[in-house]
Image 1 (cartoon, rainbow, N blue to C red):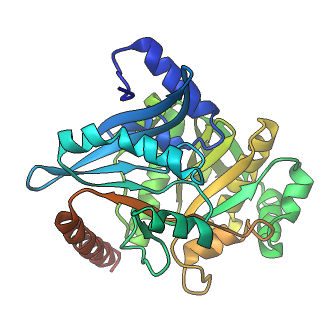
Image 2: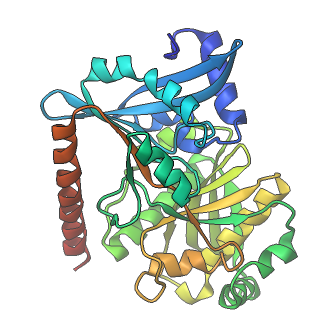
Length: 351
């Protein structure tokens, strides 16, 4: 049965090799992402052809009241989503796990571009497809990502992909003497966390604890990097980057309340992209946005500045396999309300 036996070192190595070499690879589908999300359970399933893995999916198991669970495949599955028969075969391997955990649904949100045809394909196949009309409270992850394509670029051509105001801010940071360095030691991580904490306090948002980033570094020692931007004796900005098999993920960032007009965060991102080009990375993922309006959303405004050429990447959204319809309906109604509560708490912190 193609459920990964994590006690079998050979099978684990083969699984990791497939997921990291797959053209559909995604950081959160890596086996070691479960080490970061260790407050969830985890399982992995796959499909073989002639002794070779051809499709795989890593599942996080979230328990809910009543002894039930949601099976969640963050940015999975790893296969051609247009091959519906292969996807169905892969999902059939989940069935014993759905029974084991009393799952009410399997949720997938792959890094697959949205098309009307793909949406219709999965609706016709009996899946619940969630994209258009969904708010940020309805979805686990954004379906709009800001991604800069790096293949074939150099430092100069990369700069031309940005909006003029971003180019000006980067050049100003350089003129002002802002410098960027990178590392993964405790010193780098502590600097990042201090700035991340300052940012969270300033924006009134809930932040991760320090141990979370230690887990991430331990899970991905070959991919985890902290970048810092400094002016004179002051660290102004820092970010956690995972350079995962040719895909750079800009995951978390922080910035100080001082010297904010020096645009350290813009230079920081530019340097991370340059380093990505030199390392052979194909793309730089600034992460998701929920609102496509710069005037209303500062996060979009910042990220969009780097994506003048590449624009917004629209993913298919969430594809749900429903096992227990009544529980699923309740879940999809309750989660948005919980998200609203979190936002209200954050707004109170900010005020």
